[in-house]
Image 1 (cartoon, helix red, strand yellow):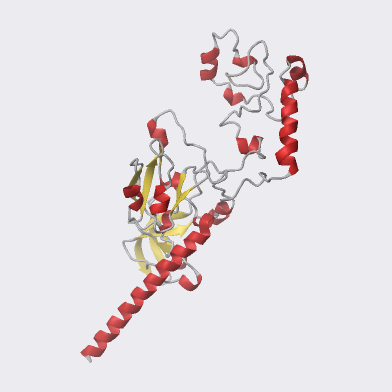
Image 2 (cartoon, one colour; image 1 turned 180 degrees about the horizontal axis):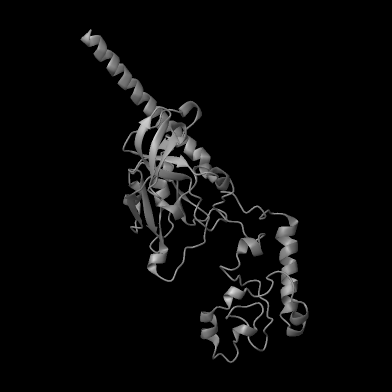
Length: 322
């Protein structure tokens, strides 16, 4: 799992920056110095922190008027010392550790939110069976199988386009957006890669597609289309029940489940906020290309063997009839 690009163990990050911040913190704690040297680091208080709820909570507070605070949000400061400066307090989600103190942000191998490469999922539901807290709930959703989008030596071993079946076309710019997507610091769902529709007619090198998102019909070149599957299972994960044990990852035989280092969004004001749907747990295949290649080779070899047996059986039947 990649670390933050600025989280490198060098003299500046491990000694000089922490030392400098500690000295500045000690000096700014004194009101006289804090008022005159109020530059840098956390800047000024983010205006969005002073929302109506925060003001309402502190409106009767004699020593806690948030409208007078410069560096704190309804927690550390007071009228007596409104310039108190505490870099230990990150105003999450308005500030984030990897932006404010990148030298301290080294994700390591802790288990963050669950990430799933849905393109390699086979709907075996071993993850659902092994989960001790019953966190995983699966449902069907349109997906493009990793073998259907294969190129090179595995090209042509995926499913074929059929009338009445779903198909997908890659969204323009999706691959470029995916290249810049980092699971560690993204704090958002991955960009959508495919647009899905139903094949109404196949004629020559083109197909008539009815798009699911708009209901419009359009002629599309078959070379840009990929077969889609509505039996590949996607799911919702209840992070309120999850204990991040990683058993789902260990149970998966198809290199689909990963425990990411991404920590954002795993909190809320209701239980419904902790339900993560497939878009929030989706990992782009390119992020774990090694694991995807292993699964791709396995599926391609299985499909190649299946086709060879089918061809041999057909040849044997022709010989028998002759």
